[in-house]
Length: 564
Image 1 (tube, one colour):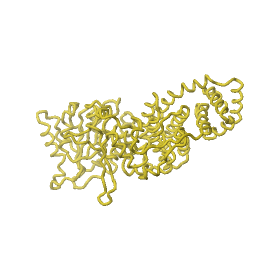
Image 2: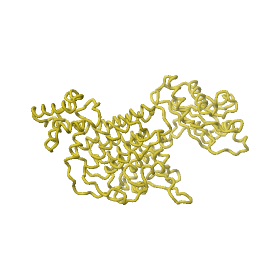
Image 3: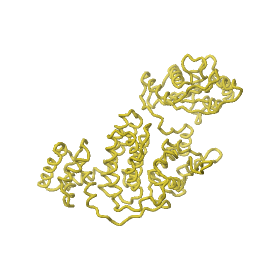
């Protein structure tokens, strides 16, 4: 059961909508199921002869009475609105049950506490099988405003209790860090234009992708504009500094042809200008790294940083852990951008899913995750995908996503834990798509039996507590091939096993697979010689380097028009 609290100033317009036909004639039999006084609240839905305007005026006279008693001075945002919707698949509630839901929600949120004769006037309207709309004017009979602090969180908590008592699907509790859900009007507009997502969602994904790849605040706005997105900044009256910004999707206009603007914080809490600055210091271009010594460095650096992040989640520093989760959210966008092949779709889906897991009520220490963020930004500019190293990185992301889900679950972050689990499933699917044929090929090229027996002795000597599980793993044959390659390159297999085995306990169900990709990354790092330096281009070429849609690029004008 999902409540969605908002405020406004047009009570009559809201009433007209609730009792009207809806934007697509979807409203059926609109009627009041509960009110502050069922005897004193005329039900417009029971008078089919009246026009919607007449009905709205009639009901508004009763509901909004308290504001007129103030001498006609209506306070700002005095209309309180809370749709409450059951989850898909839930049974339909009766009018009596919805009436109880409404009374409990207005009590829990402070709009109309039980037994308070001076409480706000309110009504609950049902015009569909699966939801009601609760509307109130936030003026009490004594002229005071109700105590509605954290009303959204209190409504959610009450709905969790109602779900349990009514036998409904139990949804995940939030912590007010989720992005705003698209309104019904936004969804209807997207449908009319044949789009699968709303303008708000489209902008949010591109803002996240660009923020993940760029180095400075100035670059962030420049690249967004190169994608055809309109950018409007708000400047401080005295300093002239940017204190806020809004974005508008290409072609997304209102009824009079003006762009529809969404503030950064309205896209997502961590896309506000202040939260962005915590991750994008306004440094000079000269401060950026100018080259990467080896083209495989970004993959190795990112893999190492993700292994470090996995350790941080277990270290007990929640602020540092939250900082690494936020950086991991950026990493997923850049990994998807740097990846080619059919598994790229799963990586993009993982990045989108993890957005809900990248923030919580715990304030993030972004400085603690500088190494991870810096490493993954390098991936936004890399032009090759080095086979086994890329798979090793993807394998590391699978385990970090699962660890993130566990971390959130332990702290009661239900929505974040569910989002991390969803990202884990996408990453696992992507990993299996690309890794399965590679592991099979390695197994086919396994060394001779005598060499395999020697490697078995190395495993028993280096990792005695895990040896039986490693040797029983289906990936053992592939691991012998990887060990043979490392030995040919000059590595000592036993020492290599000791080193990679000590990085973290081999708790995985597939320890040979874990070792295979660790050795792939480790042996590559030692055998790669420095190659020609590749200069990272500046902002002017940045949009051409990033690849869509996880990290968007400047599309052709005719392509932009198809978005919005």
